[in-house]
Length: 228
Image 1 (cartoon, rainbow, N blue to C red):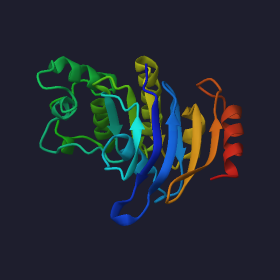
Image 2: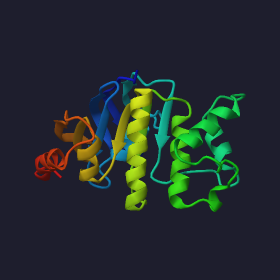
Image 3: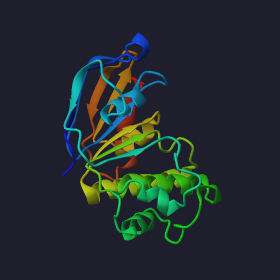
Image 4: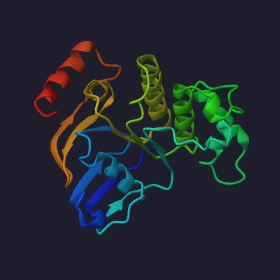
């Protein structure tokens, strides 16, 4: 079961500038919530606050699970470690290497475990990043514009991978993007943010079954047009 996460009057003020100011926000367990908003409004900061990577001035994050995965816009791999070694970084010391091997196989990289990041394509490096995020079977998966630098074919593959992983693990997913079409295809809930300080300006459920028809995607996009 995925984690239920709640930000309770959270404030984060780096150098005194309020990025989040008494901000409250909930994410339903087992859901896919997609966050839209212009660059610089604080979307990425929201993910880092939820992950516990920022020191808060006030408030708290309730429900943060022990097992979390984080996929950044860049793969963020250690270049001197092989693909399998990068994935193993997300596992407790002494874990069997078969877990990392299986994670690479699940993202379509069987046989690439010994490769260094420099020998992999951009899409393959992002797949390693996904494998690292998923290998611990997270209850919460955070994704910060993970498809922004990928070609359309790779994006389609990665979207299918994300949906399959969410179905298999039952994890809660919070995805930040600028792509309204992506939100309309994937989300159970779409949240539009403005800031700083961060605030919700539009919050719409997207309850249609996936995969969604072009008509269903188009309906959601028309709903979003007035807000993004």
